[in-house]
Length: 225
Ligand SMILES: Nc1ncnc2c1ncn2[C@@H]1O[C@H](COP(=O)(O)OP(=O)(O)OP(=O)(O)O)[C@@H](O)[C@H]1O
Image 1 (spheres, helix red, strand yellow):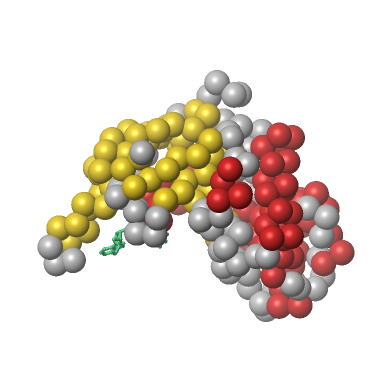
Image 2 (image 1 turned 90 degrees about the vertical axis):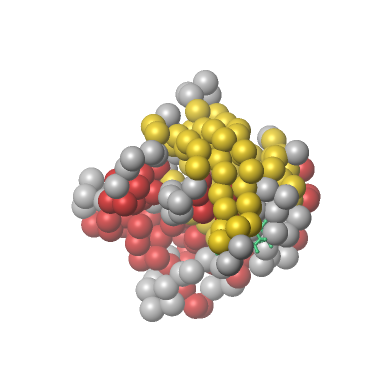
């Protein structure tokens, strides 16, 4: 698997018109192999979030080529892109967006409801196994607002894995955590890469976190430096 690419970005350009033209991404190219753990860093405003939006197929208004799991994202309909997002990519954000009115277990199951491949019973089993893998199965029946910030992020990671994506895309996943919980999140990601051959891309300001990933992509003024 290691010789397959999870993500290929070729000459991506992106501009905003606000109201004058601002070139935010200028000729961004890189690729990430399956099983790589990569961080993207750079000063505030250099274009990291804009890039992540494009890589996650949420923003399609750009110039350039994007391949996910060796498949071009060009000319895909919104429905096809939604399928790629749901099946191939797991998302982890700084703010975990858990649903407080649902149990922890149900929160982990949520992205799986869109998949027609498994029954609800199988989904529940899978969600429980993921909580176990992350050492938080005791929280399964708690409501999402009854757990700590660090636990919430671990639940969000379990949720991101429910459809067995090839890749996780993470925006400041430790931005809200103390150093102990940041270390726990890092170790979970590391294990997902080492043991389960997941590919992980993390946008982060956390230097300590970035320095421990396999590779750092540094951006400056919309370019990779
Ligand atoms: N919708 C928009 N309209 C106009 N300009 C925008 C828009 N979104 C972002 N920008 C501009 O694009 C540039 C890059 O923004 P982006 O959010 O990608 O930076 P970032 O590196 O993620 O910053 P941070 O680390 O603070 O999150 C900034 O100058 C920002 O003001």
